[in-house]
Image (cartoon, rainbow, N blue to C red; front, side, top):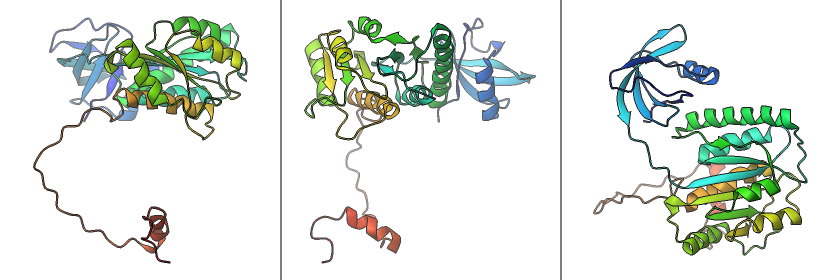
Length: 300
């Protein structure tokens, strides 16, 4: 079972094993610790500002401040592929949901996009406030999901500003509802890896999702011109809400790069599994079973 994970905004000075130090948590992290009902003797994972990893044992509590002992250093995991989501600004709390759920599936960075058709319009003050909120959500989601790093969240950018960030990407995938059905996301990912001779583990892929009204032709053209390996991609025949596409698209990319359970699986040889008897489904389930019956299996 993975350890509860906490990200510190400062470096752990007491870096030797068995060293004891107060775990100074941000307000949101302290609330998370209270929800977990952590007690003395329990172990947690701590990632400091220098991305050093420690397994720590809780010794005691000074009011709400945990006093912890470094049990051991943890090996920093390999960085792996980086997937950046450039998400068109969506109204209400939809961006909150996108940042939260996309962090959980493995997105490494976010660029909120101020598009021509974005309903949400942010001045400088509101943009700064929203960015801090999204960073806090990304941190909380990374803790909940056991991520090794907190995704970066940029301040909102225009499509032109975003395009300037994409020149060095392994691939840029522009999700557009008008893309032909032949523009498959999986093909775009693997074609870019082959053309750039980039291993999946080293890929840096940007995924662009428009706002509620979609991207304009002008915006699409600008994004496609930003990188020689930029492609239009479709997410299938269904029309997805922007907050749905903002999670589905990067999740598909991460899967194609070997994440989300798509990595190599060790298979134990010469293992014989006994057949499992199939019970008669209850009446309520028989209608659903018929939906998946092979032709000829159903009674006339």
